[in-house]
Length: 133
Image (cartoon, rainbow, N blue to C red):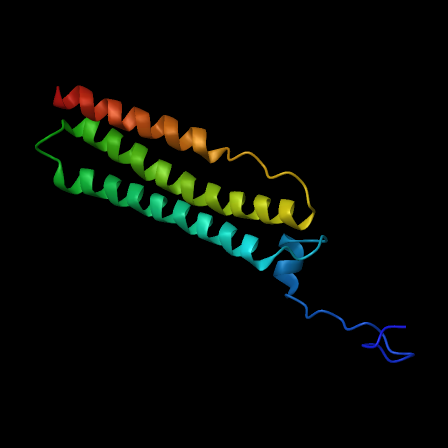
């Protein structure tokens, strides 16, 4: 018998995280806090990138009227704004998928938002290069 347990007592019940956490992160075991915090830092990095894209889209629409024709300016600003919104939503989904994988001790999912970000960023950069040259 263990020295920590008195005969006839149940094992301590871990504190509940709440109903929302139970729905989002069902089952599995609590991962090492360092991994959970690293996942959160990665999520925050994606959010910072999303905010930068949103700010870039707003800046192009607000301050670049003499650099681009109206249709191109609106199109480029729209691409950046939509990309920022998609990245923001995608980062939340990515955080949740990674957290669930860690809890169930499964391989980490591929980051599907990376090709989206790379492709749209390359497209926006190509448009700017074509306009400048």
